[in-house]
Length: 470
Ligand code: ARG
Image 1: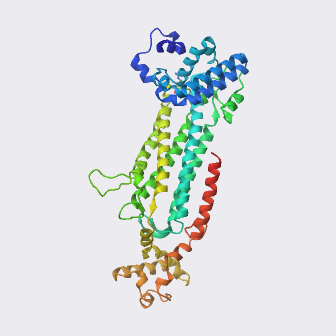
Image 2: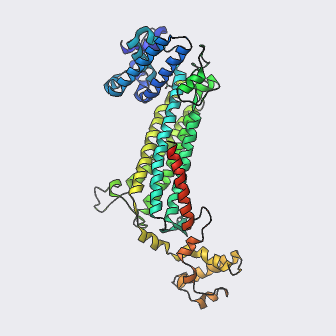
């Protein structure tokens, strides 16, 4: 059958002329929605069984259609030329044409009671459920890499900053787990988007419902959905689930981008906190000394495209009248690309992070900056009953004097300190160690070694839960 003829078979009878070739290229979605072939075959089989149960097909006819679909699916997995050269309008057209070619009139019975509108809504939801699982599994690998690095660098100190200025010391493991927490929330958001997608529109027809006595719940069960949609018009109009998935990917990309930014800074010579792994870095064609953090920069850069996919779908949806509109075809290519990008970004982040070597010497040296323990000094005065606000002011003056005298506060004599407050009773070098500053943050969620150790255990417990759910 020629493409034009098969085209007519699907919807062409009321037309006098074939579609214009350039318009046909413009409107067809097969190039990208062929990705939905597994979902299309699963749906077609479930539909054949459902209409056989409803008496529209005999059970032998149902079996014959299912067997033919199995054979076509098998062929689709090995015969890529068949897929590549097809001029089908979309994935639904492709399978229907092949089925009719194989079974003749019987193949033509399958489309009873359904529409591509409820089919595409169903298959896209099935895809999002599958895609969400794929993303969660790479997030689990990234979380695993974070947990391993946190374990390896559990007690390594680093300067903590706010506004990029030295603030208070942290453990490197605490910084790593901060990113881990964000990614874990992302995995939960992706799972929530999959729960939203887990509602079956099939049986909604083109817009008004199905006129044949089908058991929609059984159909949904057959396709692995937890429930059925409540309103046929909403079911063919709704792409909220895709927006929620794209939002979850956008939040994930934003967190990847922030991790990437930390790595780019930490790998710079000014920080020197981490050595970039050769296998995930690039050089310069001009400057022989260069080793560039391109993996992280590309992760940061690609985040823009993920946000773009969310905005693109929001804009497509805005202003659509109720019901299916062809604009909705624009949902898929966009989401597929965002998914592919996100998957690659998470995967590369995980392996690059795992291969990175943190430089304990540099981190420890930077963490020795006495400015990082200024808060400790104020807290130290508080233990003598000095009100915190007053203590803050005294320490501010001590720090300024030290700066003017060109020395570290650790080097100031007890006599000099007493000029600022009589309560100083010893040299600050002993009162204020980096270790004590860290150890004092021992409440849950703090950076004390014991607290981080517990947080790491808890993080690993939740990671194991995520893995067991995959
Ligand atoms: N290819 C279409 C899409 O992706 C599905 C078919 C619905 N087409 C139609 N003309 N009603 O949205």
